[in-house]
Length: 406
Image (cartoon, rainbow, N blue to C red):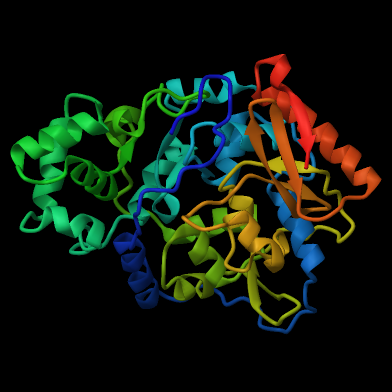
């Protein structure tokens, strides 16, 4: 459901079921096996990195240690892609990371086609720079023959080939965007007796589809059935990269999320079988306190264990929380179910001392903040002050800007 203008949605909506299998990435892995190996990273056993150092490094690389005076476009590009399952969450993610960010800045990037919103990492909605979408989306393309295999699509596409359905959708979208409901209706006219919503979802899985503004802008509009769908190359004027390099994706990930294990990269991206890719790269090899092997860019700095970690409010589904297989560097295992209660939900959270300390939501009277455990007097003041700033940003009505610390 979309929220009313000027207000955050009260609860995130579960993603549409989509799971990407990367044929392009798999091809890249095979090519790497045939090509001469890159200089191997040094295998000398380093001193283990503590969880606190990993935490502070993540906070710094996620631009959460301080709000830099960066334009929103630069922040989006640094983060590679920002979760955008609900339209207002990327705005909050940018507000918490960029000094002086205002809603109009991201909205302008949408309308100028510098930033796009579409299915990307893990088969869910993300915001990314248009130039990055052009090479990242092909890496996530389902392998030939698997596009319609999941049961959600298979029941409604039985006897209908993926190539045929994709070609039909391309023809329908050739003259410009169509909303999801209309695209589904037109596909059903061509292929009667099937569910239009599923056919449209299958198209979104197979083709580089983006959702043009005003969809996704602050406050939202319409319903999910009215979400516009456009072919990314036609909308942005940027063709899809026919031979993207998966190593580029790994490097970009490490710059914003590293150090990280192979499993971390795979969980974040939704890709599989990346070990050969990672091990072929000239990366720095480290280990965490549990002995797990971590990789990082050769010249990337690790933060000090006592580095800054001010209170920060994160939107639902934020990749700072979701970006690793082992999330203990920011989210304690004991709190995991409170943040991820099921049904594919990941609640909005707030950080104290760099770690998730509770969740928050928008209510009729303002912001409700729910700590997982009692806060110190100093932390309570910091949480309330930051929540009040978020209220000013997120809620237009002064009478609905109260902070309720539950």
